[in-house]
Length: 362
Ligand SMILES: O=c1ccn([C@@H]2O[C@H](COP(=O)(O)OP(=O)(O)O[C@H]3OC[C@H](O)[C@H](O)[C@H]3O)[C@@H](O)[C@H]2O)c(=O)[nH]1
Ligand SMILES: [Mn+2]
Image (cartoon, rainbow, N blue to C red; front, side, top):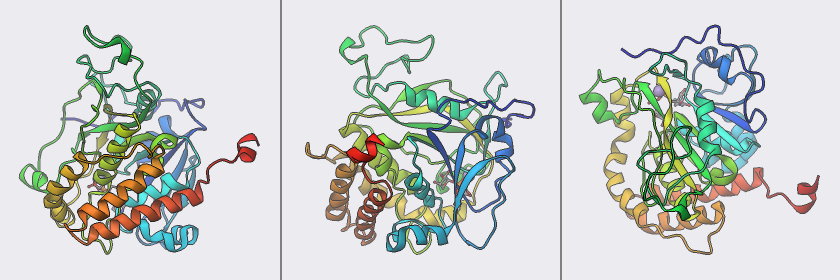
């Protein structure tokens, strides 16, 4: 039986790493009592809360947290017509938080994710581990069989090319989940009682050329390296698909990271995922994605970005054109999604204008 950690009594660290360079983005339709358990680790950081659903509902945030909160009215006011690219009634809305942030790093977490215990019973400071993952290089070009070579007590193994040991910058840190695993609806239906009790003490770089199913519930990334590609797509209200928000973003960021020689890591940290969402509701949201992805994955596996695409925005716009050209035949939804990808970049650049010489000096 796996249980969340007891964090009562753990003192808040008032000088945590990257305190002023990192925002925590939480999509929510609930009250945020879960933060009480995270207080020792997260209180010093700034939160960006993206309130989904009914904007007239009041979301209670525990005392002592520094936050900004955006509901649908705010999103519409800030983005105007471009708000059409931000999903409604789906956790995909969280990407609005990435766009409005001004910080270098983002940590995003779901409101039903609690502090996990490691095998020794110690509370896992997931954010601290994500920061460690992001601040040390990745090794996407050659697999290190002893996993993360930069970790204390590990290294590159014999036969690992020395020319590759410097590694590349890490853009994404993908964490995992004890208790309720992030299964798709069919798997949830077949294995309703399955709980993940296995804590694997490893962090790995996902090799170049390999896609992966990115889950948004415990995820951190370098916003300056890959932020513009972290669009969670058109999901939820009015859309034919849901629960593929993070998957879509994961496939887009991975082909772009591969193209720009950036690293994506998965493994530690774990969080404790407490709530299984309804598998029948999930099946309705997912079912088109389950057969579409048999075409989408080969599409991403064959993506070749041009050498002229040297910024994330340029890569993303190129990708949107490929989506329109090659996936619209699968369903008209992809034509709409390709347009929304462009709108997302336009909105991103509007809210995050490139620093001019003057502003850079100021
Ligand atoms: O309409 C909605 C529904 C939920 N949220 C917020 O999103 C977070 C995830 O919601 P929940 O924990 O209920 O769903 P899960 O099935 O466990 O989440 C998985 O699937 C959807 C996402 O990809 C998610 O990352 C996966 O873990 C939670 O904070 C809700 O409050 C929402 O904003 N709008
Ligand atoms: Mn959940």
